[in-house]
Length: 244
Ligand SMILES: [Zn+2]
Image (cartoon, rainbow, N blue to C red; front, side, top):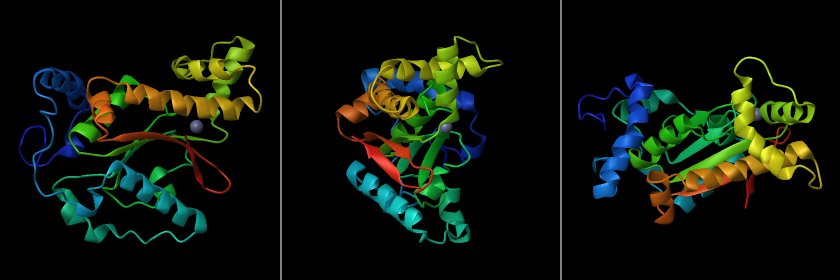
């Protein structure tokens, strides 16, 4: 059943526009009745995904351990198709870079229906991404959001170069530079590697931005119904290092 209209499930057809509308609709609803848009208390398609924020993080990191050790599970979609055809209740949401080497579902050894993934070069929370994560939390009851940066991020490196050289990148790339510049500028002159420092700072800034995203994510975070955490993926080992 569709959480928006109550009719047959058609999540794959929900226009981005509809998801974006959620923010305004939810904001209005929350003003008078907190969490009014929460999903109905139907049986979740994956009961094992109903977890506390801490348990969700532990499960995510255990999956990363398996991935690092090369003992990932076999995920046979055939046995999950029917349960997931009626809905979804992912236990974690991940905001990842679009970099082809990361692949959150692989690096946390998760199956379909487990992780709600938003990807954009430089893993920053644009309004579109924030709205998508609001949908995951408010409608799908996802208890955990991870902002996942990674080593040798081309988007962060391009931002550093653009700022250093004082040049404007072609096409739409200046939009990425504008989004990542606060992280780069915040660590200019700091000890250590500028790219690594900027990557970590970018993750931290976006964790804070999502925690403060009123009214939806802020409300859930303040009530400790969700956790928002940051991590950095190591390219050689596959290990996700949590940022504290
Ligand atoms: Zn990247």
